[in-house]
Structures are given as structure tokens and as C-alpha cells.
Image (cartoon, rainbow, N blue to C red; front, side, top):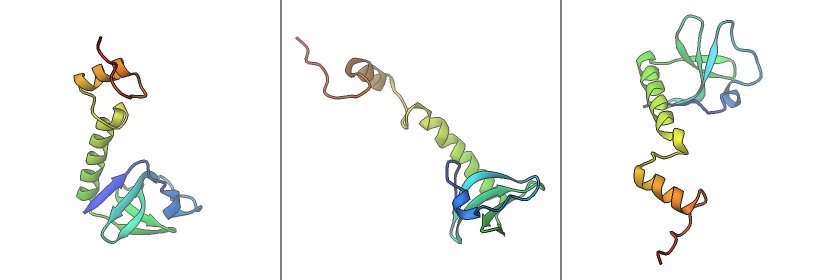
Length: 105
């Protein structure tokens, strides 16, 4: 199983050395063999980077994990949960801080 955290601090795993020319980072990748920086090389291949070294990754698994990460981010764009009409009505009534609903007179 391979997972991607786009908000993960990839520099913890890569270190202070510069990335190779044309490479870009996509967060942190976690797999059975460990955790590291998710790096896309200039060739288009995704690799796991740790302290300047690379480990090859299953490209299809990385693309699937990135898609799952994008979907989770889209769901979480409203404060970490999906907003329903009932939740929206309760938030309007109770305010942003929540709390008990106001008593009906």
C-alpha cells in the first residue's frame, strides 16, 4: 500500500541538499518499505527520496495515491468535513463556535 500526503514536510526526509535539475516535490510518500519525500524527476518518473538517495516507486500506485489525495483534499475544502444542508443550518443558528442550540420560546 502506498499513500501520499501532499502537505507533508518532504524536507524532513530529503534534507538540505538541492533537488536534481528539473525535479519537483509532491509531499511525503509512505509505503511498506518506509517513508520519504515524493519527488518527480525531469524524466516524469516518481521516486522516493531519502537523504539524497532515490528508491523507485510503482508509477501506477503513485498516480492512484495522488488521485486519492486530491479527492480527500476536495472533500476537506470546507473545514475538514462535508457540509450538508442540516450542518449549514445548525452553523448559521449556533454560530461558528458551535455550542448548544438556542432554546425555542
